[in-house]
Length: 495
Image (cartoon, rainbow, N blue to C red; front, side, top):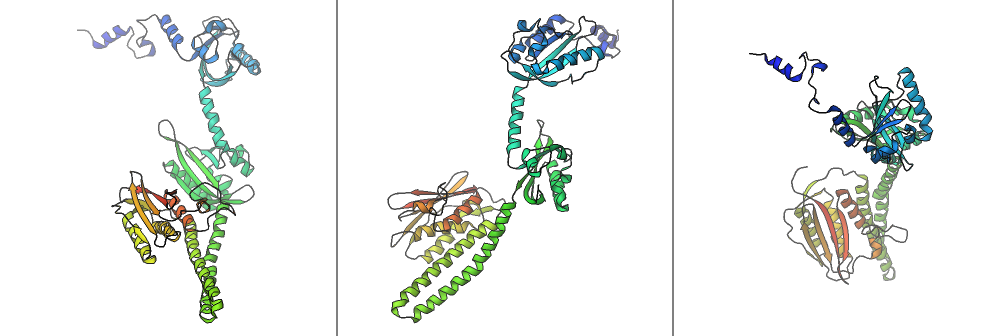
């Protein structure tokens, strides 16, 4: 009985010693020359073969898709036909140097170069080169051409976005070393690209300002390297001053969904934080000084109203009433400032029915001459926080107060879909004047002459915007209007 290994050796035509020469020839059953001619003829990549004197001796059909030339238009011509004039001398010198010394002055495994299309425009291509066996005479060289126009276009689009964003943007490797920075960053610091590239982020110009800045930069890199998004406010060194930036680092995946790079970004919020400090000062002024002074005015006006003659009593009463209105306005303004300055970052599922019921009961007591019709809205959950009652109170109270009816009627309605809950507040009043809608229910700019007089709807719109909701207005008829409060719906009790 014969040895199985010997039978395998016989079938392969090799000695069976495991070397490359002993492996079976996959093309043994085919005409090898015909096979490769078919392969080259049908590939989508262009193929040009040149002799050592630069003459093109072969071109495949795919070269026409890339450069516009049919193969027979190139065969017999110089390779310089498809090379831009400014690069021809370098190409000639490079080939001659290789033939003379054997040294390659470019990467033969894939070099990116411009080629000239038949109609005259340049085409970016990637060319892989190899030399045919030395036994051939003359010496032959083949280039495999790939059109990389689309890739170059994507790169230019990326660079346009990268370099024209107003944010400070960079690109890091996984270890946190800067690979690239955008033009915004360079212009803000007055540095050159080479001053920054190759430096760990925490050792770069901006983060050298303090130990805290260095620490936050390191934390950002470590967090993003673990696949998480990092964000923090930090004071860094700017071009001619320090600046507070909204700093973030996010991971960037490659085509295998593996973290390849890290993307740091910084937005200068120094002016925003300065304005916020000014608002805090105004808030304290509003909360204490102005309110206290108005209470004093109101108290004295009430005393005058009880002591003066009838001729002046009406004036004193008007002063007291106006002071009371201003006190109410300062209270709304205080709530508006609280919503602006206090950061409500945590929102949670809120049951709609208890909040709406409590507000309706409160307003029925405050306005006994009014009628508030509330539907049974069921067990709906919305994404909100403790400010939701303020939203309902401001809209319903606005409908009651701004009516010309002696016994105003306000009807509430609730609808819901999978994503949102709409609360409708419909009244029988004259509607909201256009000036009061400016900047709240439309996109018209607020000016000194075109703006609303009240703050309640501003407060409502601000809170809803924070929730991801909205406020809308419709005039129902000659008499009456409807305000729609849209809230994000929640279908569970999870935080």
